Image (cartoon, rainbow, N blue to C red; front, side, top):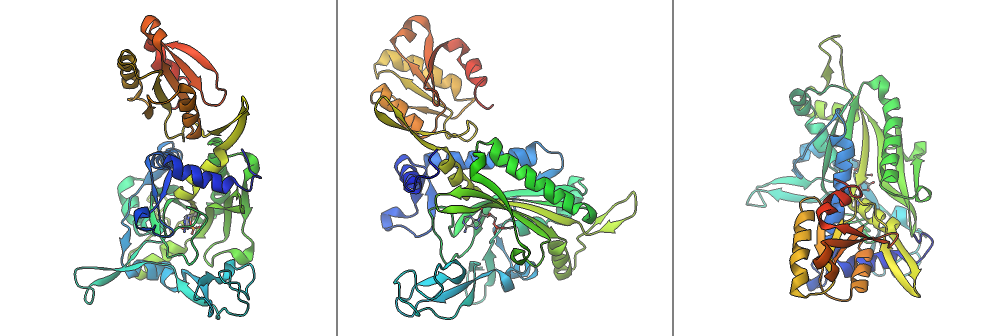
Length: 439
Ligand code: GAP
């Protein structure tokens, strides 16, 4: 890991493009600023991050269920949530060069960061970050709709549906992974802040008197998730918001922050949102959004603890945390020390040569491994270079089929981190790997 290396950011961006993790969107047309496409490796990494989140937040719990709500929604939702009125950033224009900036992110509030001109910035005005479009064939008569700027509101709007169909009662949660859209004034730092991104959010509905306890529980549980997946402890911290940072509806918020090359920055926010959202949607829609306990007869509006993480941002943080360079035989080896659960490919199958007699057993080995794990297959270039290519994309194991395989029906298994190699019989290979890789 190279946390203090000022070039780490460029190295990871470079590797992402060169090896097919992340591409600039619409690159052949000059690129579409601030949007990115996830390539063959990026899509696997991102899926693995989301899969691990889903596993810990939904699969391994009895008190959380899933949801996949629509991205388009009518203004009433955003009116009630407060987004139409408040989801904005202060924007300034430069009278000299026309650039627009977020005032609260300026190092020097009097000078334009684009052209450097002092005193050229206008007064700040609020810029709403939601993308608006029209549903229906005729723009003039069609209804205005919004692309969701967070997945959270889908959970609040469906609270009664889920409560009535899932047989859950507080404390219980609704989890969702999906795209969100924000017309950010200053997107940047690669996929850290983009206008289209993916979130992993969970709304946990609790009896009001238990909300503080659950808030602390989720702060701890979410920190543990990152650490368990290999984030180094010294590059992760939980930062509690000061009172003046809190949203008007929140009685407590903490951010999980990662030490990015530009400093500590947010991966996830864990907020005690009180009963704000359910009450607002109940008032606006006229639908009761409360829990009625049939045993005690008690009725109450649950309070909500919300762990809200960015999937795309977190995938990038895992890449940065995993990036390593080490000297091996007077050469520098780049290796992504990704946790096995996050690695895009778990195994690479590498015939020592392209000779036809090695291709048949290689296909057999690939066929044995593929039902269990995502595998790469590569038969060109010297074996040493192929090992390096797999190290660079974080593949935990390489399996090499050589001419001895034809005699002993065994293959060489090489470990990414230690670079040690061992001979394993083909017939015991799946069991051997199962002891080392996630199911
Ligand atoms: N429902 C609460 C909510 O949306 P947020 O702090 O605005 O809270 C949660 O967003 C997470 O979503 C952030 O911690 C971040 O990881 C991710 N996120 C937010 N805006 C983003 C953007 N423009 N680009 C990439 N990720 C973003």
